[in-house]
Image 1 (cartoon, rainbow, N blue to C red):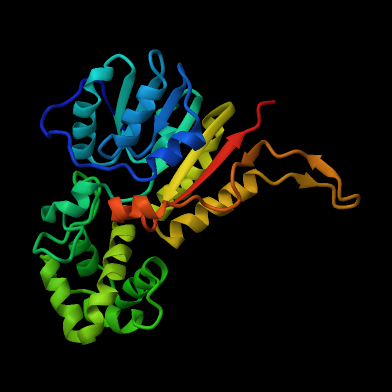
Image 2 (cartoon, helix red, strand yellow; image 1 turned 60 degrees about the vertical axis):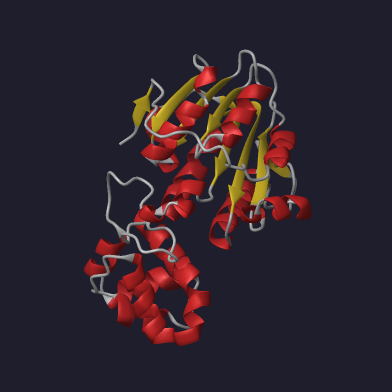
Amino acid sequence: MCTRRGVHCTSMPASSHHIPVLLSTVLASLAPQSGDSVLDATLGLGGHAEALLRATSPHGTLVGLDADAKNLASSQERLSSFDGRTTFYHCNFGKLAQLQLPPFDIILADLGLSSPHIDDPARGFTFREPAPLDLRFDSSTGMTASELLRQSDVSAIKVILRDFGELFRDAHRLAITLAGQSFEKTTDLVHAVEQLLGYRAKRILPQIFQALRIAVNDELTMLDAFLAEAPLLLKPGGRIGMISFHSLEDRRVKQAFRALSTSVKDPVTGQVAVPASFVELSRKPMVASPEECADNPRARSAKFRVLRRVSS
């Protein structure tokens, strides 16, 4: 369920060290203008949103969504100086259709983990520190990773590891070891994987945690729902940008954008029967410069794609 947050919260201070990924590329590609309306569908700590609000001053507006209530509170605090130009919803971007929002000039979605997810061991997103095995973006709802493993059989865990972690070689062995087990802490899971795979565990643990995180949050289903809805919310000439961090995400974004920007041709004549309503601004994804990667290592795997709605 999506809920509106109309008053900014002060329960969590804004991060002073947060570096938005691909910020200069995002601004150059989405080309915000004064008065533009913006949807930041994955608000995070508000770094991209702050830059977009400054670029659309003095009358531009921004709607921000986030599934993580703590992130949302932090962003509202960070963006409090733009009061009157912002609206916030505690909402997963995959449930965008529920909000019945008006069209936008700019839509942005950054699919990466935010800094608190990685830096705060208590969230359970990292296997390097002992913490509850949770992995939920919205800790108020849904099943934790611990509960998922305990309640799932071998075949279900094998599918999760194979499809979401791209673990083709070890999925079956891992599923036998992990399914039905009560791992309360991240370190419990790490120990079981190390016992099974030995020195190879260090390389495979990130894929295991990615697979469980995607399953717990139903991330790919939410992404597909967003990709089906968000382009329809663009005004003529509007732009949508997507930042992805692994092939499962980027492949979906690429396929959705390619389909929307492809004209329908007459099967007999080969002529364009229905012109495409969108155009890709770049056929290849934009990536971070070596300088940005050096300053912000989390940008190394980021890929940015942009789609523009045709003006007429």
